[in-house]
Image 1 (cartoon, rainbow, N blue to C red):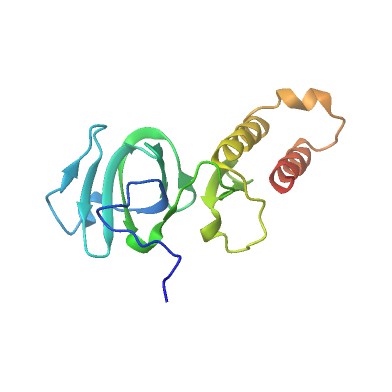
Image 2: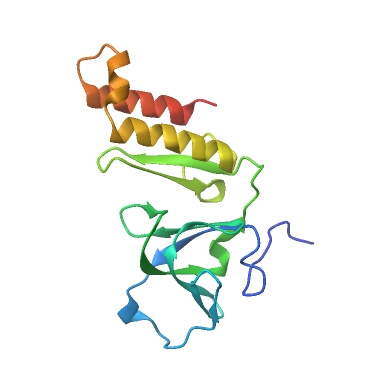
Length: 173
């Protein structure tokens, strides 16, 4: 019986995939030589179980969406160089047109990120295409990071209003 689940390895993981890499302390690396250096400056080391990536850019990488789990949130940004590890089973197909992503918000830290539907532990999120997910995230960031929108609303508690508006964006198709 043929399985519909695609398996990934060092020969195909970089083709239209989504993955969450776990951050790794450089002092804890079990190797000293990187196997491949990309044109954009990222370095890769392959193992039988997965791949290490050293990069200063996370989020969109060519036709892939690779984010870094740094403990309290998923890191999607350009910035300082960080190292992450993902097992081959952590890769999922990334299709720009399919509804594969859902939005997550941490109201305490006022951060917003996205994840792949294959990793949705609640399995009741609203799934969107990559383009639509990006639009929702931009709207949510504006609500979380600014107060200029609040002049259009009558409310007593701005934080409660902010949370209600964000939740409405996340749960509306």
